[in-house]
Amino acid sequence: MIRTVSVRALCETAVLFAVAAGAQAASAAADHSQAVRLAVEHWIAVQKPSGFLPYGFDFLEDRELEADRMTTAHLARQVSTAAVLADYYSGSHDARAAQAVRSLLAAFRAHSLPIGKSRLQRAVEATRILSVPAGRTRIRSALERLGLAFDGQGPGKVLSPTSDHGKAYSGAVALALLTELRYSQASADTSFSDLRRAWLEGLMVLRIPGKGFRVLPTSIDPTPYADGQGWLALAHYHRLFPGDQRVREMLLDLDQTLIDLYTSDTTIDFYHWGAMAAAVRYADTKDARFLEFIERQTSAFLDRRRGPDGDNHCALVEGVADAVTALASGGRGGGETAGRARQWIAREMDKAARLQVRPGQQEFAFAAARVSAPRAREFAGSFLAGRFELRTRVDFTSHCVSAMIKLQRQEETLAKR
Image 1 (cartoon, rainbow, N blue to C red):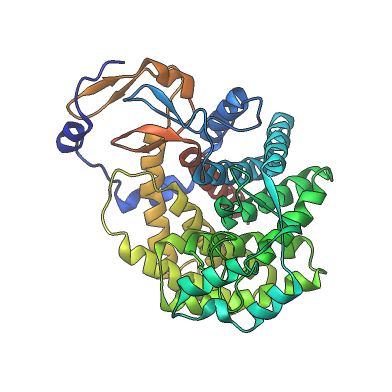
Image 2 (cartoon, rainbow, N blue to C red):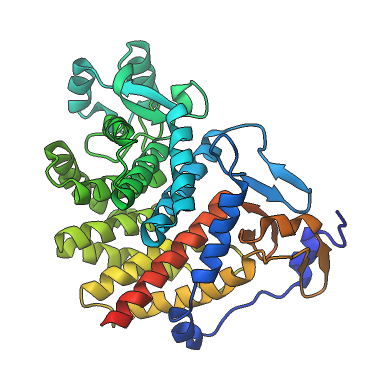
């Protein structure tokens, strides 16, 4: 590995690029299928015997990231990638992608821990004690001491990188559920239906009455990421299984709870997951409150995203893309918010195209420097963390693939009209 210049120097000497709003139409009509296939081909080629995908690679350090260990964040990003791969399979019916998803689901089975909720725990939670703003550390400690935080032998399951429930992120179980839902719907394969039921139960165990979802079984606090991911998974589940009374009742409460909470406290951490979830709920119900929530959240998000930068924002594009689809479906596609959103997407996707590692690539070029990276050719199809971040990670790629799939579907829908 040859380092011709430091990252700091690259950032100082390179010029940030942006695309004019006039590129909006060209981006909207862009064919992303080749970029998506390149990324998926890479995943299929490098999937490990464990079922997991390589987590990432640092081209400056010339080393694989977290090659021999699994962390909570690592597992969560594997699961989010599996959900995207399952979405790709649902549109492509590529048998190799189906096998890759099955291997990932099998890996998630091996990392699933039992969880439940006793009658006493349900009674305690019904008092809304988990939502009390004061003394939360003492409340959590007391519940843990009394064995009321969770039941480690219940019928539900959560995902953990180890045998420790304290590392079982609730968003991971939500996205594992989403993966199985997408895969089983597309394939009619019921091999993982037991996991679907168990992950659903695990997610429901982690719901905080009057709030979102506990970030961990050992915590009583929610987090915007987990709230959005949990909402998205339950929204998809209800759309496929509308007769499930428990989920329907929980979702009706969760809908209004999260709309109220994040209308008064808009946060980018919630935005893209929340926008995707609200879009599913609008498609399912045609309830105008979801459309209004999407429009308000998207407008507030765009107000904060002024000016271009070099970072990979494909994760955020996912939410904005679904927001545009929902607004168009609701007759608001010609409004100011939808127009601003399309312009922002155009800029970001032009940048994303420059962040994908190309076949045969062995160096990275900047305004005033070139960095030799011979191993880059092994990662063709992967997306970098940013214009000045010479590292890739499985979730950077999966978010870009997901965004491109959504935009491609938008274009196909428009072409049919």
